[in-house]
Length: 106
Length: 116
Image (cartoon, rainbow over all chains, first blue to last red; front, side):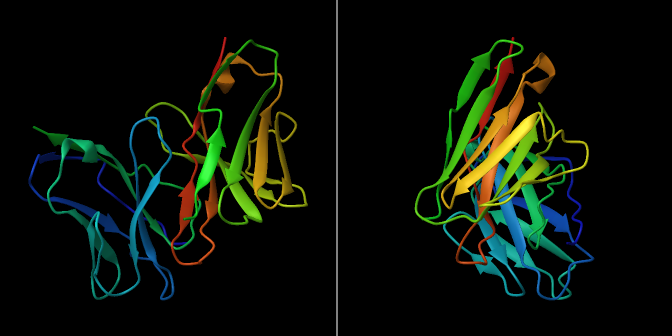
């Protein structure tokens, strides 16, 4: 499974778009990119996943570069409830990195 | 769909006692479940893989005699922390692979264990 690299922390103003990057330069051709988030003292929650094409659901959008070496999770209108740790996972990796701690401020 | 229910959500126990945590797949069968431990301000650390009808596979450094895993049915895996000590206090989370295959994993809500 490919290793992923994410910034440790990010801030975002409420109502603005939060763009969370992830580097997965060693991802293989058939591995999906998954994003989860973990709100304090809860289990991780699935957000979105993608292979090659950009994806959008009711929670977020996922932009994957053409070479698939990186992706960006976009929360279009961040709210205070989006404050959480966001994890980017390549394939069916079972080991989580440190993720990005997103703080949404009023 | 693909919900994993974890119970209890929190537990306090005395040193030396054992605590059992249950993880149930509610609307699907999970032949494999995963157990994680998370210390404050740290990421999830995989402890073991629970396999229905066979022995669990433990990650390096995890004591299998201390963290007993039983996966006796296709919908239930249990983690028993035996002879608990304060250093076992942590947040324990279970997960299972989503059966449709490409939606990753689904996670339980976690169990906060405090050993006093």
